Length: 56
Length: 350
Figure 1 (cartoon, one colour):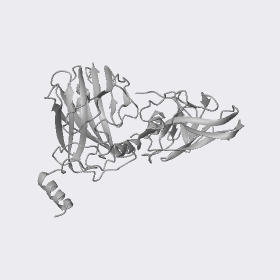
Figure 2 (cartoon, helix red, strand yellow):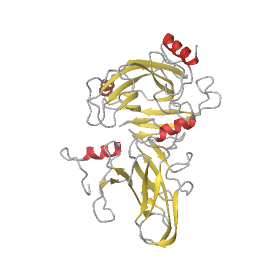
Figure 3 (cartoon, one colour):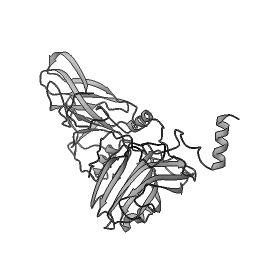
């Protein structure tokens, strides 16, 4: 299985984006619970965390 | 008696759907291997997890697997009167020799409600390079994220036809979903366990062999009833089948062009007229409404992923406002530019 890392970039106003995260292959993954790539991202987080972590 | 009444009567008498061409009978999309948006070739690919032909997903962890699309020579497709273009090939070595390993080809059917509490039949054509090995066919009701635990119901099929194209079928009693909790991205999955070790066979409920072999498959069908009726695709049209596939994966490129190819053909582009160092953006509409908001990967006109073209290649780019029907593509690069051009893929697989 592919091993990706993830980043939460800032938007044009310098705030962390909440709508999508950037995967290490350059793909933009929407923070939508039905997206299986986002589910894969959530699975990489600590079990007590349910929100994206900046710079993960 | 109307045709509809006649059809219904025959269905009741035969225990299956009237042959052969009825859209919606087959729950498997792209069972005839015709749609190949990722453009795998006869040379094949070797990655351990992912999709090859549209909807044909595989997973394996050790040993060697080469998965390819092999063309049928005209007149040699296994079904008389159905001249298919190509079939799926998995050449496997050393898989399943350890107890926890397997090669599973799987088809994810959206919605665990599919065929729940019904008798259903999986049918497929298969041939091997040698011998008459056992493979497994297993059905999993996956209740999705936050849903009830799923279970596997597996059966073992001996490929008695060996090196000749032979049709096989397996009938299942798919459990009721009464009392179950359905979460997000629920599905009914059909697994073909082509090779497996003991532990993985135990999970799938199968007894697949593990000797090196090459498996050719085509004509996968999942339908209601206890009878394998003549094969047809899910939509029974080429354009319909493509649209069904695009619900889960689509791309800006022509169908025959591999994502990441250097080309500007079909690129989504905008000419802004006046040079600007500001953010440039354009809206992209997907060819069909996708299953959910997809993962979007951009390419520039040179075929490099993760970037876009903006008066030149390799410029910083991104997607935002991603929804099931489209997204915004933009470049925040500060190169003084008059135009923006973006190729892309969008993935909303289960």
